[in-house]
Length: 212
Image 1 (tube, helix red, strand yellow):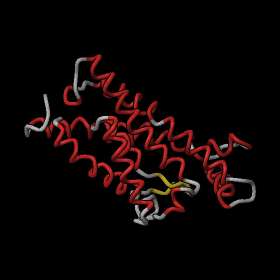
Image 2 (tube, helix red, strand yellow):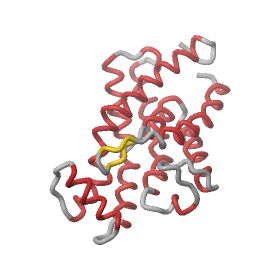
Image 3 (cartoon, helix red, strand yellow):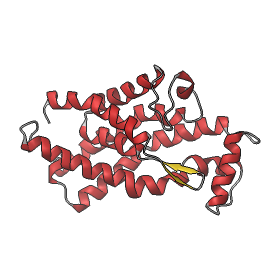
Image 4 (cartoon, one colour):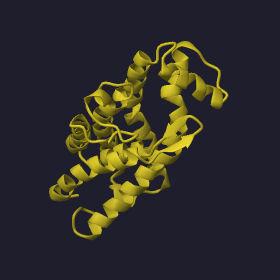
């Protein structure tokens, strides 16, 4: 992909991250979104630096008050609230996914257009590894706010009760803030991002914006 096409994708990835944050499906008390799809897609399509820029634009827009976080929330309180760890984690995960994907594709002698099934599975796994900083930061901040007796703690209890999971202490908040979201991320968000990245890359190559 040439530099002009990639630069045009930077704000597009920021907008897509905002849009997918609002695509929410409630399973009992648990909100599932497609936001990780956009974060992984940014990492796959953009260089590490530009992937970082796209996520920074998204966070800056939230900080300016635009209702772009999940649930149409915006403003500085969102960037320091109970979901802030995930948002700030995107700044690490998107470029990390970019680095991991580029190393993998370079070693395979391929680009996003020429992926076979094995390559796609590998990129899904690598994207999951790249999202680890987001999960860990999300858990750390979530735990800070989910103290016993707080609404967030009660939500954690009700979510695990809905899924018939028994946990307490740090395992309760880790399950509520990370583990219950992993199946959707690994089975839907990340595979979808890999498929979209491959298709979009092919589209750009066919129109002369990238190398085949």
